[in-house]
Image 1: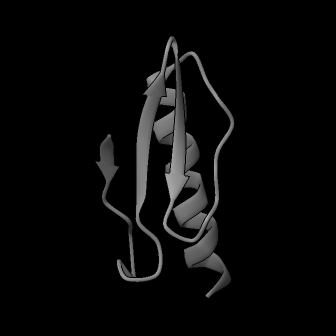
Image 2 (image 1 turned 90 degrees about the vertical axis):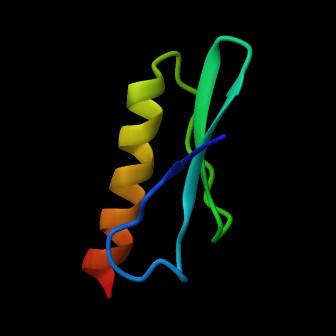
Image 3 (image 1 turned 180 degrees about the vertical axis):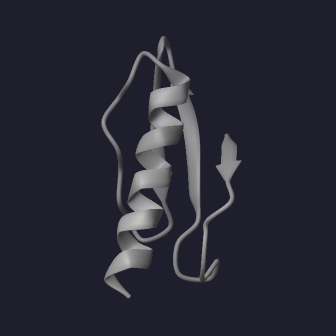
Length: 58
């Protein structure tokens, strides 16, 4: 797993990226699960977008 540092309140959301075969996906402690991606960088971007969406909503 590769943790991603959340911007803002770290206790609310903490994302990680995991790999399964040739796919990577982002997950969050809130239960959100990003789509499987062949690009690790895209999975990390999905996680960052999830965190920023949460931050902008609060």
